[in-house]
Length: 211
Image 1 (spheres, rainbow, N blue to C red):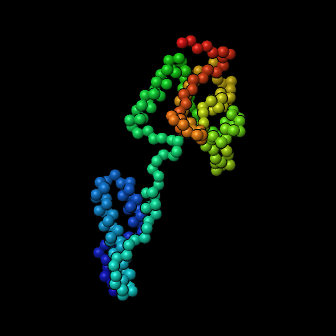
Image 2 (cartoon, helix red, strand yellow; image 1 turned 120 degrees about the vertical axis):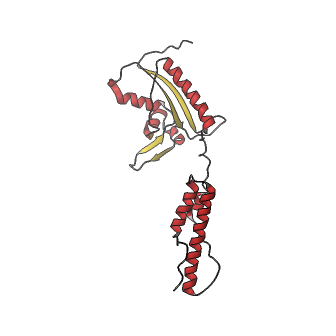
Image 3 (tube, rainbow, N blue to C red; image 1 turned 30 degrees about the horizontal axis):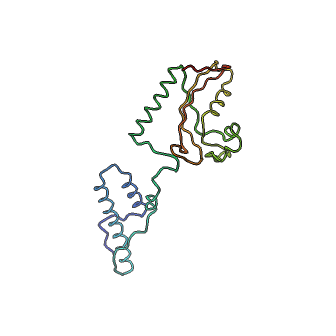
């Protein structure tokens, strides 16, 4: 009867979980790495010992098969082309800028609104024509509906005003600061992901701006 190994036998899926734990664990790396090395060695040696005992052969420890987690680590960590990250120092600058947008808008009695980033594709085609389709991040959802990430805010504003109809008290003074996406050729300072600041007055025949 073969001797019972002193270390537990771990299934490869358990080793995968432990490696996953090592990647995301908040515990110190050195302690977690030691734990993983111990379990990997224990699992390999235990499985090999059992195999040698059953077959009567001796040999060196067999290396575990490559795991799917090794492939996960090769994912490109850069944001998609035309988009960007906002680490803390850049987020502070963005918040400062957007706060100035809001303060200026509220100074002139505009109220803030926002809309879904995902809208019906037909909404944007209705405004800009079929040529806009090549600039949309669009797809068909699981309900077979054609939808798109908004390339601008104005069509969503018009949709909301029509939806509310007579329940709104005119004139309206609304503003929005929204994230938009437009798939087009990038130039210096112009990305496919951008932010738009709108100040709209609805329900008056004419608007005069006095500086």
